[in-house]
Image (cartoon, rainbow, N blue to C red; front, side, top):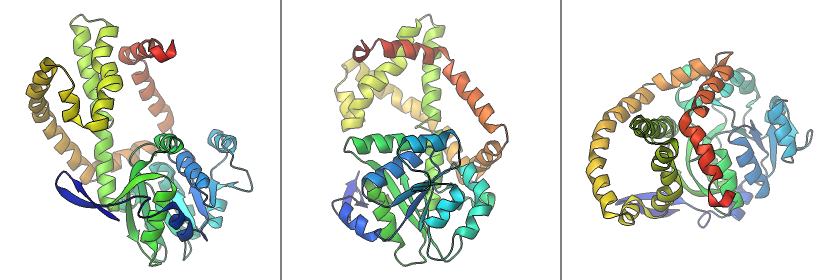
Length: 347
């Protein structure tokens, strides 16, 4: 473990320098890691673990996702099984189904979690809001979490590029006395950039806040607001899109991602600097109350209940696809298709 300075606050982080891949393999050498669910996180985590030399199987119900697992090299009857069979074969059960899927599966899963098994999550939702989800693990198993700070696709892509995606980790229940080592070993195994300690509660609340806030909900709302304002004042789709999205993702984002927002500011024109510095506090003042409202809605369980209620409806997928299609059909994102085609790498 290493002590690192995060803006003046010292925190403990773990990398593969302190906890090597060889050590992770030693910790998990007698384990069969059963990845349950091959949707968002499953392919990345299962693939990285397999490539890193761990004993991995996949549990997935038949259908399109099952066929994707076969195409990715998982062999039916050898490394690919129906969910309940994979749970029986595995010693570490990686619960990577959707939150709604986990809730639906729990009554069948719980009796299979016999003493000595480990229940692994990549999100604290089901455990943190157990009063709403009904997910209460047996006391004689380890319950742990490694939560990648990004999608499973990013986890896999960065791994193949020789990079790692940062992850938080937590131990909820340590029945074996070895839960923390297993947790860290799994984090190293899935290709974490570095690992930082959290709790199931903190991860669940911060994750839902981030997704609804700056990572997805707020950023899309901001982009739509600026694009629509420019269009309503007579600017073309191309100009409005370039000034709203393309410059952010292709030019400025990589700059502040590399060295920070201050460095990005320092590498822009003095006019841009002045305007950004003047308007930053105005946007913060407008947005901070909304962020506090969002945080409280997550903390008190309102957002979790909305997710449970909506995602458990039989026509959930159809309604979701309709909402995503509405976003897909927006002029801003249709303009994006043309702009991407005009990028130099596509010509």
